[in-house]
Image (cartoon, rainbow, N blue to C red; front, side, top):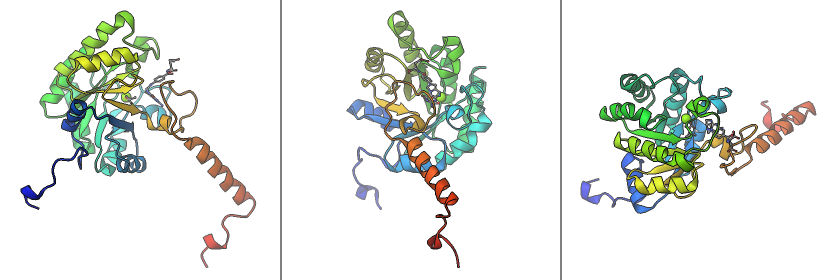
Length: 277
Ligand SMILES: Nc1nc(=O)c2c([nH]1)NC[C@@H]1CN(c3ccc(C(=O)N[C@@H](CCC(=O)O)C(=O)O)cc3)CN21
Ligand SMILES: CC(C)C(=O)C(=O)O
Ligand SMILES: [Mg+2]
């Protein structure tokens, strides 16, 4: 097809890129993201039109069974990220850099980002921290790798923060804004705001040029992100109060499993139609 015959740029690109994040904010089109840790969910979310898939270190909680994200390693995330990046045709895939893989400085951060880019097929990386991560973000961006920032509640520093505590409230708003500006100044293409008051997230979104992605940050942000096992009702135990459960996959699977178990016990499965002759 010749250049002149190509269709006009549509609002829904064939492949989401970082410039579409910027355009979405400018045009007031909301960005959607979900975490994904495997090929099957990646295909479902991608085909449903989710704009970006984050292979989060929340895999520590949702896949690997840890209590926190702190033990998660690069080597654990690489195969999951490769599975998601291999499956996503349209969505932009973001690799979450785990605790201990970038805090040591810009060179360590770049080394980690390069591993994710070379070994997984992800199109961007994410790391936690505002002012404290400015130099790391700048170094990675300078190598041509898009970075998504992450400020507000940063789970990798939950012990330093003293628990799952809302950030940017009252006097802490100034620090949140400084962190947001630092992430933008360092060259990030977007920033996640986790567990901040809706009013604070609205002010940060208005102040920044780059889009903000809320996780428990109210509606006045450029896009929304949720941990997929939470939004689909698969996670055990307590889920954060900002999560809306859009399905009951745990209930559906539990019903399926118990029917299977009963049918096997009763000799109902496999009947003739599920047997070879
Ligand atoms: N499954 C899952 N969902 C997440 O959203 C998530 C993870 N894992 N792992 C990494 C971080 C940790 N996050 C969390 C974890 C717990 C709360 C939480 O319990 N929040 C309470 C308020 C504070 C408290 O009582 O501890 C809430 O009711 O929202 C919030 C965010 C967000 N991320
Ligand atoms: C909760 C999001 C922002 C995250 O970092 C993750 O899933 O690891
Ligand atoms: Mg994370």
